[in-house]
Image 1 (cartoon, rainbow over the protein chains, first blue to last red):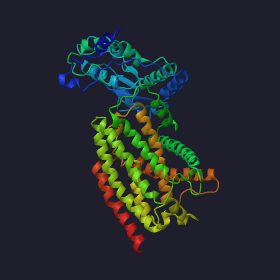
Image 2: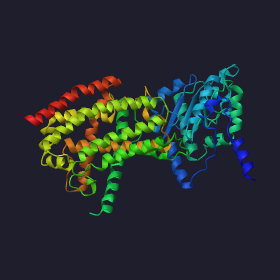
Image 3: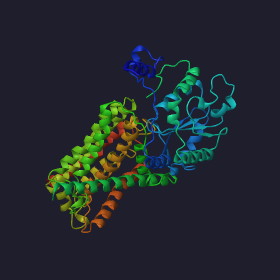
Length: 213
Length: 309
């Protein structure tokens, strides 16, 4: 392969950022997300343990599920004793909780926040609405399956699930992280085009970069 | 003593202080949880958080200053700590204490915050500059009573060397600055409330108003560096207060002296924790006005008392 071909391939690999104006395009990165290889086996084991013991979550209260997140942090359910804590910034949190149905307006923000999180990142989808649409299955403005848009690690079913169910979901997530089974970040990078296609199919007013660094 | 041995001792001292500072943070989180009627996270949670943040696979940066922000912050913490003698009379824990180190330490307390302000500004998040503006203005206001208090004890002991100040307080509890110059201690302890940033002075990291403030864009290893510094810097400030006002830690046996240091710094920190658990948060202008009013007057009174009576 000569240099020209490599340049062409690199050009094709760049994101078009068609939702932005010409002026704005220079302000945003046009690089695609790439798969990150795992570190040394023993390091990875240790870090997986640390990741499972310190889960900072970003609660996205899209629907009624947000009301189940509050009692977790107060004295009745006290989620801090499991090493789980809320964190307001997507840059610092490692778990993303989607609290219920996602309308098309909010899926845009969900995608944006998810892409801004630093990997490894995990997603907990709360309630039936995120699995198959739940009671909003035939609504004109809500999505039915969340995992068509971002990779989901744990579903907590119910309408609404109680905080105990959410804690059980967290414990399951911990076990999966220790076993090294939660690799949503690389899954997203590998199937990036498929996820983008699905996202752009429903988000008509796409006025953000194709990948939010 | 050769410089190699000195550096080796300094490394041991820094590691001990960082571990103690982080453990203290964990214990305090546990205490707050008990006040709220919760069990709370285990006291080793800060260590796990740091490991996890270092173990992140990606770290997004926003430019050179974004890299330098956490580095400056850690340099400020290290600089503060390395010029404070931790244990009086100990070779290992005397750090690089020398004549006039008190002035240098007062400078280093400021230094990290200024570096952090530059780094956080580059993140581009609107909450960062709000947090930085609040932090710097509050810092300038609590530095006033603290500086007045330091001037008072510099006049009292005729020195700016921390080791000499500790030496002057030896030989019984009544020789502590707490009893020889109580007004200076009151002014300094009130300014420590602002330094430790528990409520009512938690206006910088105010999680309900400007989510975590300046470090909001800091992620992965950047955040882990800041967390490490929080342990080290926290310990350094408490050790400084112990040395200046509460007689320092002195004992022929180094382990007993370390236990004295741990007990004293714990109790000093508990002052701001008790106040923090009991009071709600000030607004920024209330906090700044508070520092410039009563503690400043008390600080001036302490200087007048020492200089003329």
